[in-house]
Length: 235
Image 1 (spheres, rainbow, N blue to C red):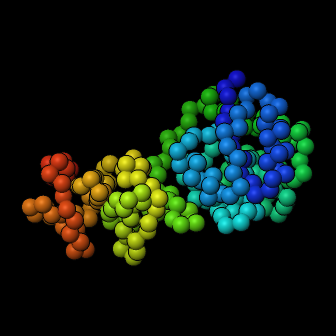
Image 2 (cartoon, rainbow, N blue to C red; image 1 turned 180 degrees about the vertical axis):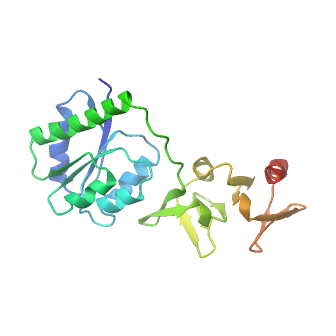
Image 3 (tube, rainbow, N blue to C red; image 1 turned 90 degrees about the vertical axis):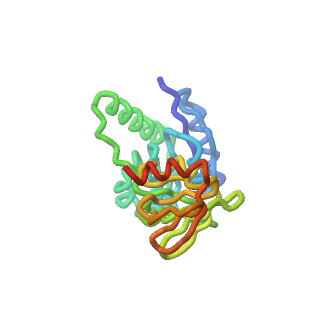
């Protein structure tokens, strides 16, 4: 059986102990991380692929439901909570199971069995084409923000951060320009300088070593990137 990578997101130490014990009983499960806040978990998920997310709902800061709403590419989600009243709401996020604390090993096994059944169904059926994402998820201070591609004018490197400029505001996120470039659609955004990525739709003209945007912003254009930018504008 394929090894399934898991993480725990819960603000209670006791819940961590129980889940770690249950996960340790199954050879086909591997615990890759345990987090006490949703923001920490989101930061991990930016860089790692997992199969199962054990997620509490009521946590300080970002709640479990808010985390699910912010995620564009979810793993299999098993909610673990002390409250029953969120059960109906949770299934709009396509969660696999809803375990009410304190749950026993039998309930835990049932949830894992549902994950395995979904995996089996996926192998038997032709998967529908995945919709291309229309946004990027960013960590901005202590918040997780969904920023639509249509709202981004350009980005600028700023040390270990990147500034995202929209018509209304600027957002500062701790991420590299290389990571941003990998997440933005290459048909919509182009690097024009080592420090700048620009939405192609916003470029009005190129003059000398400068790039002019429709809103009047003037950015530098690097010699190395100039030809590629011109070729993209012609297409």
